[in-house]
Image (cartoon, rainbow, N blue to C red; front, top):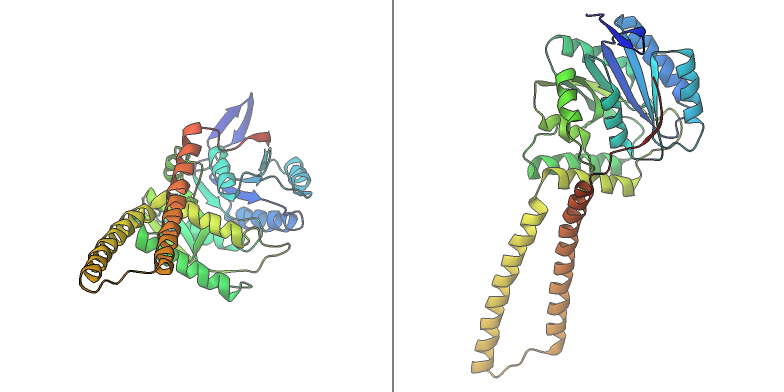
Length: 320
């Protein structure tokens, strides 16, 4: 591997072969253990590397711990957000600052074991440009979460034009060419595993067993998972809008048939449809209209976010 040197501010530093990007949100208890395990794995590989920690607005002592790690080990770089911008934006910030020929994205909660990284690297050295870690088992997760995740990935496969591998997260290795392509994409509502599938390149899987959280609680409760799913669907599919149009035509056809039936009944039997049924029909149609107005509003809101062209994140401090 190349060990070219970069000149920064008059000081020479070794160009890293690998960049480890890890978002951090309230992981004070886990960080020292995460750092130790990552360092052990990467030093065993032997190539120069950097560990980029992104503090995504943590409210505990996570940034203090990151600062101490940076002071003790210059291979640790820290990006401190001015507030919480979200996990996917934190990953994007890490990609922006990564200098390695290959970038490994991994969560800092130790559910994704750093010991899998060498397997990702071997696949990359064999020619793969995106190596995603695919879960063959998930410890410590509820049946509801497992079921909802399975439904989500299969739904995304059905309604989008891209093939997102099932049972994968953001734990993956990206070749420099892939990183350069992703860095150019500045959309705000980001679904990084979808974007890394969309860019193409040669993609391969490495199976692994996902672990229970080392400490703390999940950073993706139900309401966040729903929002995350909406970002994924609206980023890669127009199907909800197409459904609104199709459903409108279906209702219009049913209404036309109903008008004809009502007219015939009036002519031949003199029957008059009661107010209750009319009111129910109006409420039903009104509810359908509001649902689809909400879907259109979701897309319009995302368009508005892009048009404003605000930066993806603001860094209070960057420790290089």
